[in-house]
Length: 235
Image (tube, rainbow, N blue to C red; front, side, top):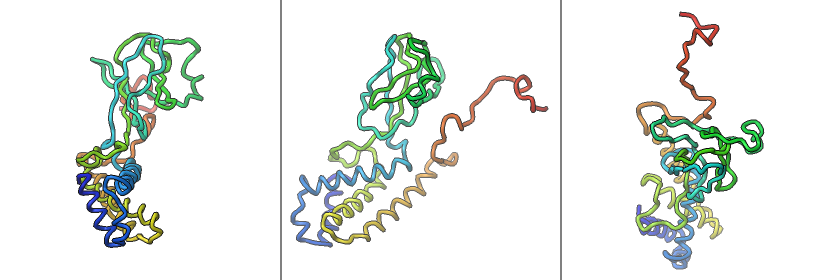
């Protein structure tokens, strides 16, 4: 749905509830503000369902003896993963650590050409140990939010099937403003959200999709001969 279509759809519902209220709403003013607020609410509800739909990536080039780098992507909702992304090498996920645990990962003044951990303070990423070489090194996967101002074409990242959620969420927010019970829109919202969750879980048909487990709980491929390290291994 385009921005104009979303605004018109909301206006249809508002006029069904109160034409007096509908006359007070401006498509370029207060009504648009309610719609854009609803887009934020919908995005927050959809992050657990479709994080990759909202993902963007940012490549970081290391500078020798510089640990911290400010992300250019702002207002992101979460960090999906950080991976080593060096030409002619396979991508490798980098540990995201708690800065309070820094003592377990590096020594004061230690540097390394290939830092294998990182942590975040606000929009700044710190590599551990401090990089010792300058090179394009890391790719950060970020779950981003919708732009603060809706484009003319409508939501930027949200799939078309989710746009009705914006309409229903707007009506719920307006109901709170008007002190009017609009619970029927909560029913519509939850029903549409349930269907989206069910369909999106099987959108990738090759294999089941689940909430992503941590790096440490996923299988790691080991090329060593099991006879040399697994004492319970048998032919």
